Length: 298
Image (cartoon, rainbow, N blue to C red; front, side, top):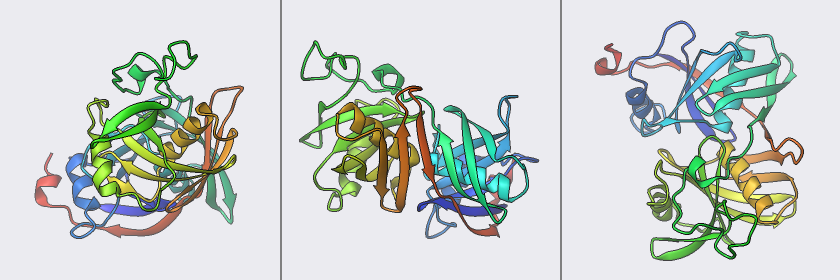
């Protein structure tokens, strides 16, 4: 199997060009190539495929490191846009990419014939509990039944691992739980991340962001991604954190989100209700790997 390794501020995936021939057993391939000791090493597998929609140019199929299918990845979609432009699969600098979370439009900044920066229309955040999805035992944002946020999970108490947290839940095409904290670097994510991911509140599991507001324009975060564990960055997570900050009155609508792997610029436009993400995408190397025979059978 020929592949490319790429990353968006450290969130690395294995990318396979499936425009001519589909890859067999992608769930098993994802687990194999993601292993950082016996495979290539990555946060998952991305297939670049023909779109089944006349409204999109390409399709991105995302698989987490544990083989589970993901709806959307903000860092990966920037890399897909860079891949298809840099490889001359398109000459357009505005590219529409189909995902399980809908069609996303990516606008490229190009220098010396290569895409160096990508701005993605990430769509409107979903805040209704059933659309995230999240099962919350109380019918309202916990503080007041008269709150205008009563049909949203904003600053609501949740008990995880015997400790109470306040969570704000957002879907950016995939489910996110944002926890604001004064301590980010010292968190034991290996312990508390899985407890959030598989909490009974989240029927489809959840990505959890632990965020510290630095000022009205800057937020620091770490993320535990369902199916992959802690990653250096999560684009949809950065978008969810920004939305959560604004819902809680903590920041303005344009925010620099500082992740372990680098920074993303996020804006939640008040007029359109659309979240925009801007960040870099990088090619690491190309390669070829022999897949186990069981993964090559149809």
